[in-house]
Amino acid sequence: MTTVTTTQVWCDRCGEPATDGAHPGCASARRLEPPRYCHSCRRRMKVQVLPVGWSAVCVEHGESRG
Image 1 (tube, rainbow, N blue to C red):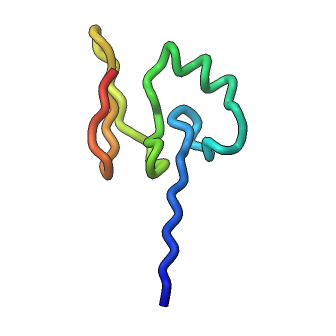
Image 2: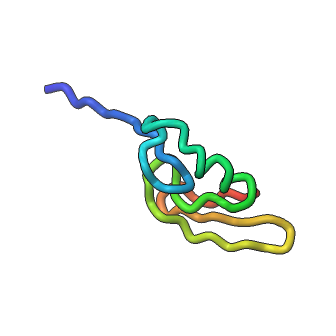
């Protein structure tokens, strides 16, 4: 028995598959706003905007900062 695992990358702004096009609205918003979805698992992240940047936490993949 063979198990096939696929890895899909998700848009960190809208949560849709990153392969579904260019996401021009997401690209422009990403310059000003932190990510909202985990790009690895599509979970909605807990986002905190700080005076010196932002922090986003995925329960599965941990924290990222910007």
